Image (cartoon, rainbow, N blue to C red):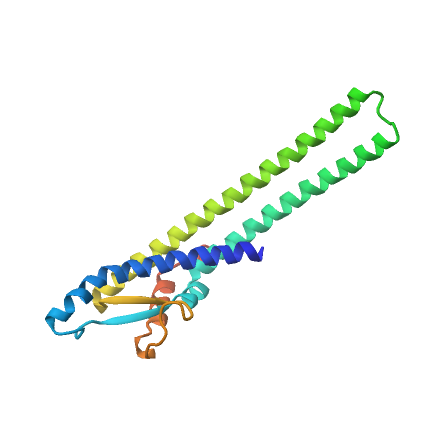
Length: 199
């Protein structure tokens, strides 16, 4: 379950990082042209702490909770079927050792039935895991689109040349806290998001 949650967070973080790098990519033209115009004066830069955004943006929190529930349901379903399969295997083994089958053909038929159950369980496991991965990707896209749409509106009045993402020490080694707009972005995102449970 934790692995799925980390996967969700990882994919969401990746989506956000891609989003912010796109913003940075659009602004890089201004940076390249700036020296001819007398340096970087006039550029307005800010940064957002992605970890905080992912932990406190209610949309992301809701997506994570939904994925945790789904992955838990998958785990319970697969465990239940695996337990039933193990029970059938034990019963077959006991009957076979006690010569309880009237013929070798009957024993082979029962063995084939259990082997098919095992294959069906493997197929179901693959199918459910693929569905979880697909939903994870869909959630990451929705999260990215949500943040992207908000930033476009937000920046119409703020006029930033560049908004940089900060995840630990990965992208930003140092910046004055006055350039940190995380709370402003987070408050804005949460203000316009209505949780399904609260509707």
